[in-house]
Length: 295
Image 1 (cartoon, helix red, strand yellow):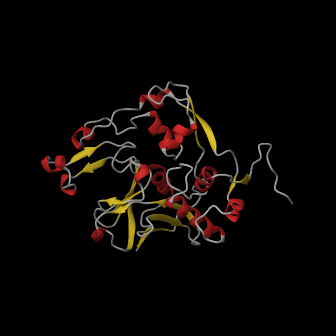
Image 2 (cartoon, rainbow, N blue to C red; image 1 turned 180 degrees about the vertical axis):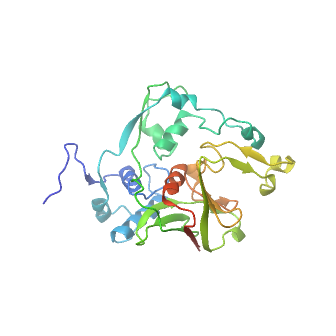
Image 3 (cartoon, rainbow, N blue to C red; image 1 turned 90 degrees about the horizontal axis):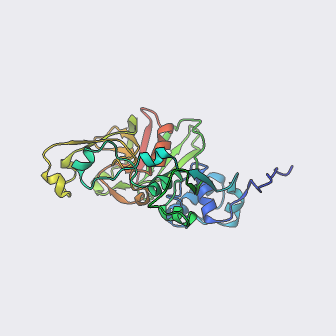
């Protein structure tokens, strides 16, 4: 029997790279900040999808992949800016001490807030909304964003595997089915990139962050500070909106205020995800869950 098609033409195969990135996200496979452009993280996401679907693994949006990667509804939707959105904005201090004195480490602009809601690169949000003056957005303004909501987290992951060379984090269920694929930043120093099995020890949504100046010798301010500082929660907190602690001192999985930079070799020992990915991972993990780090 032929599959029923809605009056709007859905479901249907994806027709562009933007649609492919949205369709992948709706399956728990993140291609990085959605930007409508194919790059290393999108190719990695396509490979993960192709492998899961038993397709030829090319990392390309080829004909077979387009046919299997369907959209159930429009790739973008409207978001209405609220007074609460505008009320939560605040400037972000440039110093560690200044950050510790803020009430929250919130979004600085509506563009930043909108981009995170759409799992998108700010440049794409600008392109989707060419008539919006982002320096003067009023309540009630309507913004077009990728509709990239993740599927409901119906089961817990059995394990997480972090691949250092590919800079990806993947979660699998008890039957080894892939349930999440995220780009991931890894430690900058080689000695911090130790392979082996760790375990989840704590799970914290919207955490604060204790700044220890001894961990940041490259910072002139840190070298002058003689005390630790506690930074308040918020999306611009150094660990973003989620923290998953591991049973090795100084190691954890967390969000970041800079999602466009995820996928680099730059952390002090932790594994960074985009905030939306870290938030989703919180729903999948459990205390004691194994986290395997592979070369």
